[in-house]
Length: 345
Image (cartoon, rainbow, N blue to C red; front, side, top):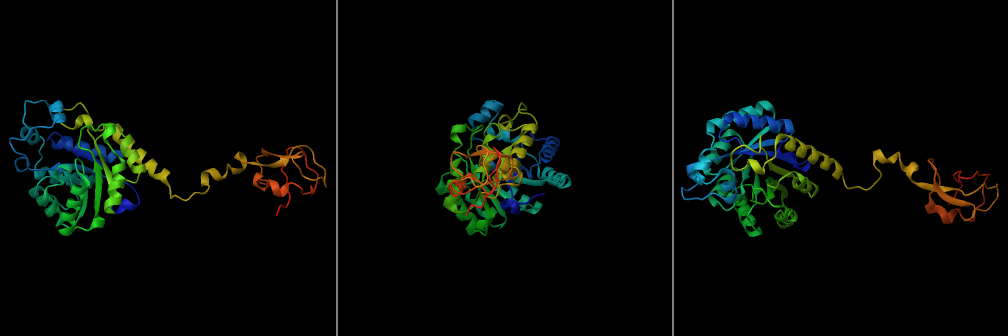
């Protein structure tokens, strides 16, 4: 398993199971299997006590109404998606056996304390809780590593959340801020991926991206822009009932995203511009060198009439030495197209 300390080495990929288990622990275990097989670093759920988090008067979001219908209230819908603390103990054990990191987002203080006792070393502040002072204060006091999602937030709200965490004991270097948009699915024109860099420059922290778009293009682009954490919802089947399935990746898509992220990391390289090992062998094939334009006799003066540049497949004198070669005498006979070999400097 890879921990948060590896952020400087490679992107930490969180497969967000969320509530896509539909309240079924066996479905949750199948999601863990998928995340592990896809190569994700962690699989993340959501831990909450419904009655502690949602008022009976709270309406559903439009995307929730579209996905689950309007016959239920938000509290009824969420209650159907709740797993018990005992379930999460079992899921943590299952993750440990599989060899993938278990994470879960707490939505209330009781859930946060439970996850702390369960041994979590990374805590996630979801977008909807970024203004929840009491939860921020609680998690800040744990002095653990923290991810903050910033959907619906502006820079001022992000700064306030950071201040609460830091004032209560969390080190700035242990905080990663995730750019995010809280619409499911997020329209591409609303992603505003450049805001991730704005956050990084404003707060001098590590940044990542929590994605709710359809497909895998945007998280891959985020990695190319410097995201050290990627979080993406996934499901066993987009057609399952529930609020988040339709905006989630299916198993093959999750696997493709992880593979693409790892390929992009390789492609980013170290930033030093020099010939790579793989291309070095092609230098003498692809580049041109100074050659005889026609047969040249020993002692003949090199000029534009008797030399030119061509690909030879052999090492020779670079055309950048052209002006140094012009006017020199041929040290021997040269056949047409033969590379010129003279001392130029």
